[in-house]
Image (cartoon, rainbow, N blue to C red; front, side, top):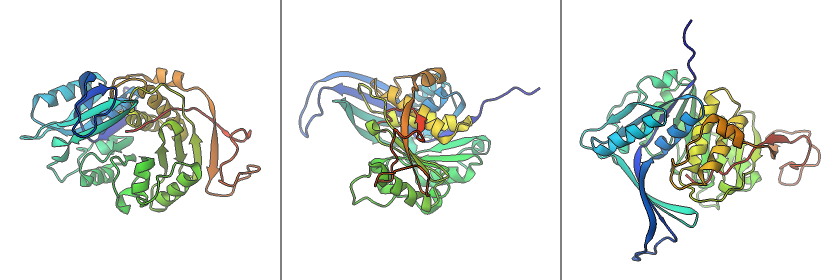
Length: 349
């Protein structure tokens, strides 16, 4: 009898070494201030999401480019220590491993990224090296070249998830390959072509943006809204609002990545989109309570224990029979036809 193997998530994206300074305030231009602490950690949206996926109970492999420097060894060791397969983390001769310079103050952060090897993909072939054909989920972000993301999407035989961060306008061909498109409110505005407008955060406005993205081919859309929770439009056009778990916010760095990685893992494991989002929300809520993008490591049991129950609100893109909808199209969360869910704080990327 063959050994049972858990589903595989392949994360293709960036690997950085993060330099994190915690201070009481952000310096103004030209100003020098004293920081409280400084640390060097593993980061990059791809690496952050791979670590989170590995905590979600599935096999996780990282596909990335690093430099031929000591930082590359540090990055590989950090990923492997967290249960991520690093055979696809390849060194680029003459390149430097990506770095990020992060200031954390007043519960927020500012980040400067030097991409280095993250933008030095040399091959024009399948960037997943064949792993995309085996994976239940391929997860990508936009901290690597767009053509690499597009080739990874084409190589995917399972579900393709795109976290469209940093924000960028995307071709319809890529959007149409997305089984789930994941954005925050700012990314949602750019991807949906509404860059001149205020980012949509109200459920009715988010629902409208989701409809536009689904009209361009995305099968499902998820918008993370920090302390306002998460809004999910499923493949059947149903939009569900998942509110946030209150948390004492220390640092929002990587909280969106925690959500996305766990969400991808649970989809690979066979959970529904809503069930996967609920556990992703729990991961995001835990992540904001500590400094650093990967400083809070949990397992699936911890995530499930964190995931309490709370009423969600639901809207649909088709007529429904829920009584007395309000003018925004969002049903009353106290209505017994509502959905039971949990909350979290996905936070910023």
